[in-house]
Length: 331
Image (cartoon, rainbow, N blue to C red):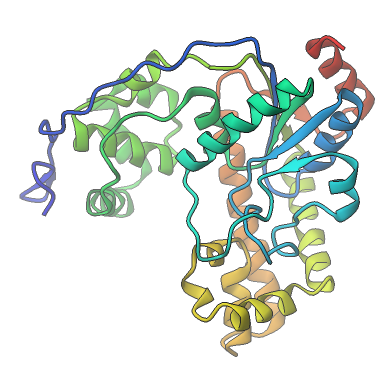
């Protein structure tokens, strides 16, 4: 049982946790550029061209591209791109190693300082929005995650629906509920978890979080139809480049790979099922496309709900985008 949180089938606030809301370090003069968006939206190509013209270095904010030996399935930068512009936090962890948002915040913050000291523009690029948020605002000093509590909230969501759980949040933290769409299950569950676990409202934690760097923030929006087409084309391309062989090699190189953090990357569990003979190749590709579309939808929901992220339409001329960045950066 969860102490003070679940009693007689009901969720109750735990007031025993004594964590305090700490202040975030003050802003400094370092400018950073963030380019986020869903998978297969073309954000990496845009970032590469901006980095070339602005004299920038790219910091990876994709939680899957951090792993070694997953270069095909996670679409890591080509060797020609790595030669053209310095890239950081790509392919540096073994598949069995975990990497948290706190780890990213620490490493990326150090890189921002180092890149700025070289007179270069740090570009933070990827689809893991929580990494970007951790870098900009730091992490909240809340109680650790409680999977039993999360499971209870998810059970209520499954049986009573998204709008019921959203109303639960409205009762205990109306300010957070007003800023989170009823369909954004992840953020609703997290906000309820924070309240019932610590007795602190998420909105209170967010209120005083000032961004630590002057930042220009974009998210790439291709539109759903084009994005789905991009996803299908990219999946087919990754298979043609040897994605199945990459996964087969991982299972040989790392016994028990299927239980490692890296195996949670999009498409790898489906290919593992194919290699085990549980599905055929056509079913494997269809499942990967479905999962990727679902994931991309969640990514778009996240970026659309963030403050001061400017929508960047994929058909917008690249020259116009680059000129806007250069004007902001002061070059």
